Length: 304
Image 1 (tube, rainbow, N blue to C red):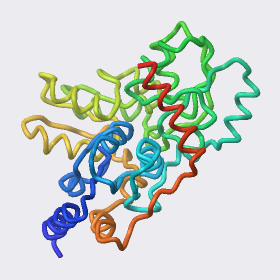
Image 2: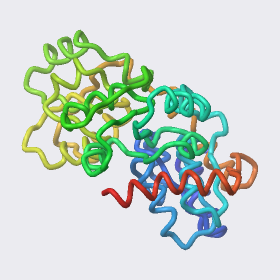
Image 3: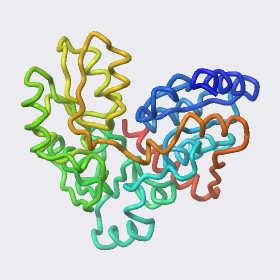
């Protein structure tokens, strides 16, 4: 079976079975082409809650599928590849957060969306990379315990200096690989290119950037900019996607090391097997976990 034949089979089966396919921006181009919605994790969850389809397939990692289930508990949600996890989401457990809160009384616990649903049940509010600054500015609390990504938290702290922050030394292993030396090498190779990076990168990388923002924000910036060349400081798949979307512009990865093995775990064949009913994993969450995580997400919506 060729790529095209497999894609055609997926398109046919999803229509027959009324399945909605979500693809995170870091998925491969062949998966993008069969998806109903493409974007960041929270945005995809919102789209899933609005669709009439009762079955959802998430092409991404486990916490994303859990967020979909949290916002659409009445729908059947599958993770296309059951082994697709997120190291950042595994860095702290629910009990770890409870302990951190006990050690920092009076601090509001703010968790990144890249966490498990169980984790969110003991936090005050969740944030995305695109909403974190606005949400934290709007919070009544001055003291913020930001978990688990200290790089994203540090970037938010610079944007919201009026708040007091404490961090856990966690974060994305892929984005944390990037250093000032990668920036110097990339700029030397492409002196006319603008540097666009994700705030999960180290502070030394973000400080050298022409734009810092979410994956979606990076793609919008590149599309709207008059510049013709860009160095992309997030998962390398975005370079390929931007080249397809904007063929008259040039895109370069900040480093060849910017590859997330967890996002790359999902293949077109996984999606094919999932729509056939012979693959994937249904996401099941206890009612109390759904309610607790939903409260954390609803607080984010309320604040911004």
